[in-house]
Length: 95
Image (cartoon, rainbow, N blue to C red; front, side, top):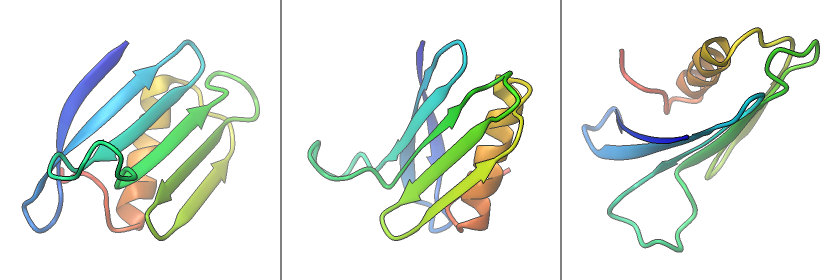
């Protein structure tokens, strides 16, 4: 299932969050709609092995990569952790 959500950057620019959620993983990208289709995503990542003992989250920005390996009990826990990691990188959603 794909869902589009808007994420706001600190400067007030609008970005689009694209989610692809499967039974045990979530893939995502944050895109700048002002950029061309061939431009690299602003942020991309994956939450893997949801519900398994060795969950894994990988996030990449245009300049930085971050990873976390520990159990991920549910999709909502995985997204919460991914958003927290994005916030640590200074590119997370506003609450």
